[in-house]
Image (cartoon, rainbow, N blue to C red; front, top):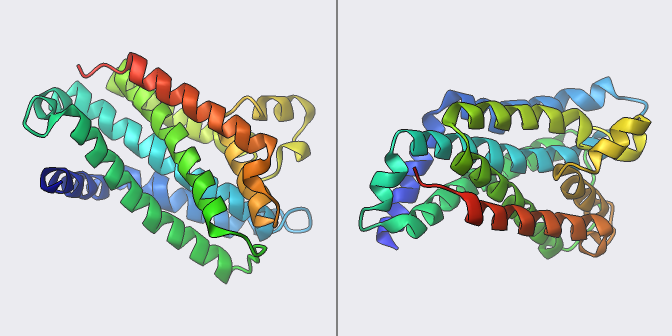
Length: 237
């Protein structure tokens, strides 16, 4: 575990040094959290927006930052080099995931803290329920990030990860629930993996049983499909 911890620390330092990663993982979610309730005042409040921003934070870390960094490590031969070292490929991936989890935890604490300051009042809920939803969501988008990073060129991973992130904001139910989107957009929304994550969190934060919803079942299906696809098609070089 010493080798894994050391590698995870290095992955964490390198991620924090990338200014563009900080913009995606922190600046954009916090900016949307602060300004969108004001723009949508009268139709949607902080209670509607906060669960979507929490889901978007998971996507920003698990998919965008992870996919881009792994894609460039693969392009530069870093994955091949470290994978052939005593650390090994399996522990390298574990170290990367550990670094992502540290960043994600800090990110979620910050987003939730700002939302509470802005007046968010989530219903009393079981913490294990929310943790499970976030864990499955993280698995799904980590799988998607690995799938892109392990099959595309680094430039292609960079472009696709950012494109998906931008598409998820208006069409993934992040700002407004899918039911409030126009007809075609509502249908497209349920084809995106972020929508069941957002809806599961909304149900949980509203006091419902999020892990018993159809949205959570769909999220679990996405997690299985994307992780299996990543394991099947990921290429180290």
